[in-house]
Image 1 (cartoon, rainbow, N blue to C red):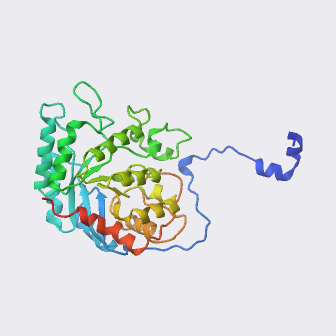
Image 2: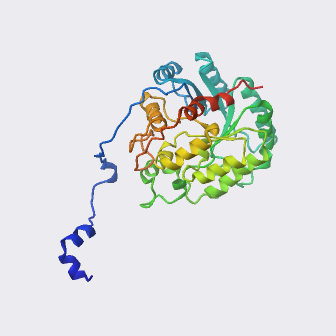
Image 3: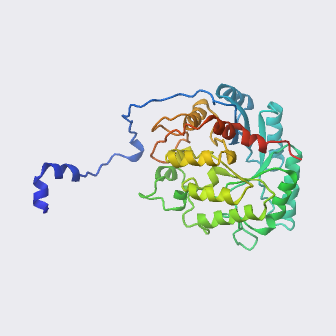
Length: 354
């Protein structure tokens, strides 16, 4: 078909028409015209443990009211404080409700360049657990920003950290890793990035051109899992690879000591509902419910809708800048899977530390 013929044909003109628009992306808020069943799940079907949240700035009593309204039995506060402030956070939530709040410690890198730091890290973990901490979180500054005294970037699998992981095994407390971010965060912030708006709002979240690639960081982390089979690890945010559930499945197959949590990843999981549902059915004893969002009724109800219903094309729970311009689909998980994900798996990890 030549160009002149195409220009004359009404159908060809219709299917080839394009236009450039000047509507700012931030002003574009389309409303779906789908008419499909929608279910509002006000409380979790079974008592739920939110295994991944950050409550430091919140009033425990206000959080308890949200928990009661939504059927949340307990919340694990991952404090972002260290030292004396961390101990105060443990005390604050323990005094508010010892049976409904637990606290993870945050890895304290102060004094990293001092002799004896790695021995000190072991002692700090012991003190955290003595004060009531139920685990330790290691964040993404490891592998991306922290350096030795000579300026060399500290690797996630640095063997000087081995005594810390061994100590966690001795104390029978898990170590949570969050050392990477979505795949899109390692790409340029441009018109091809599916999380452009989120990164435009938070350019500091970008790891484009980081020293280690995301795969290198995860390989280092996975090497830690293999080296310490007696230590329980939680690979936060669906092992930081919800874009590739085949990889996450292979990770769990290879390391019986690893759990994953779903925190802040409903967006990724819910846009691939068939693959995700199959994964939940296969690995139901290794998945933890977690939110990683400010505790509010509608936030929790978004997670419940995702896990419990077969609703189609609805908004995912997220922070204000969202995570991508797509909606999600419900997994309609069976009761035995919901029980494990909501509560039973976390209950095994929250046993009193030694």
